[in-house]
Length: 502
Ligand code: FAD
Image (cartoon, rainbow, N blue to C red; front, side):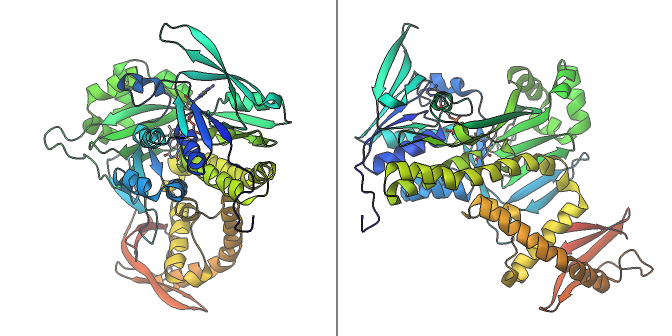
């Protein structure tokens, strides 16, 4: 139509899965005037006795701009109130084996990601749906089959008695947000030549808790960081919770988990690798968590297309489950919903909207899926390497001092912008070409001013390090110390970078 609104009537949508993505999709469609029914396999997670049902998901997660934008676009007020309960994380705190901590800020412009309680977020969305007249929530319903030519789905409903009954449902559009092992996707494969690939990585994950301080009740670590204990082949991470505890995750190859049999082996492992965690979490908690909590796999999957004609579309993990190392799985799922809704509102027909959705979204989801996989190496190993830190700091330095170059770190564009993932990748490649050419200038500028690091000139602490090129000259930071063959330079943004001699 002339005002850009959809020319087809809002119709009946069935959403399969009431996880975060399905709930958000239901909210978009309901606010857009569609009649929406949500079918969820599990019981209502707002009911305390159902909480333990969702045991395969982490307790908290990192939400960033894309996820927030997905929420904000449909309901700014709800978003604000959800974010009040989230805890800002301004950077990574790296813990070494001696218990020393070093902070790496995420962004020169002080933007941050947030730690949020997964169930809390999901509950808020469900509460919002409950308030709408055109939404019905059906729990204990598992999708069994889809007959898309007849616009029909069959759900298996779990009855109080423990028996099951089949429920037949008609809809104009089926929206599958039923997670990595999506039955909607499996059913859609009967109708469309759907390419599909999946990969399990060799690492499993297991959750632990660092409780609040037993006497003061306060956080035992800085709550405004995502804490990482990178150990090359494995890593331990911790995200803060509202109750001043931290939920921690050990990501480690399966073989190493198998080698840790019994409490003594576990404590021996933690004392060697994460000695500070032993005192923070307490030996009994560590043992209890390790014995009680599952060691769960991590899957990465890609498929194409994400839809069938004007009848069915899959969103979130159902279409692109990724390993969690970029903290983007749910964020990307929320962005899926926003992008889909834009097409529903702006494209001429529903068929066109779904065609265009797959065409736009697939290249983006492939990019973030691959980045998440690559970030596993970055988080457990590269964050400690000086070449990684140098590159990060020089990019940040250019971003803050020479915005005219348009240089932004990959992390900042993924986590703090809504630029399409595929466009981010193009920009990064362009940037690397430019930086490659500029790299010599940067390094020459820096070494010249610092007194030729590693050559015959001894440099002293407090030597100023200057960057010079044709655009001008600016101070990068100050040499703070030299030990063990490493110069430590304090950059203007407060971060420290180690530069090896020579
Ligand atoms: P799900 O959360 O899997 O929800 C699917 C829903 O569908 C479930 O409720 C399920 O019961 C239901 N369902 C399944 N089958 C059926 C059926 N047949 N019929 C009806 N209902 C069905 N993402 C981030 O953005 N930031 C992070 O920091 C982050 N950390 C993570 C840490 C870990 C350890 C893991 C494993 C993942 C992490 N993620 C993170 C990813 C994030 O959890 C997922 O991307 C997100 O949960 C996907 O939401 P979803 O609604 O698509 O799927």
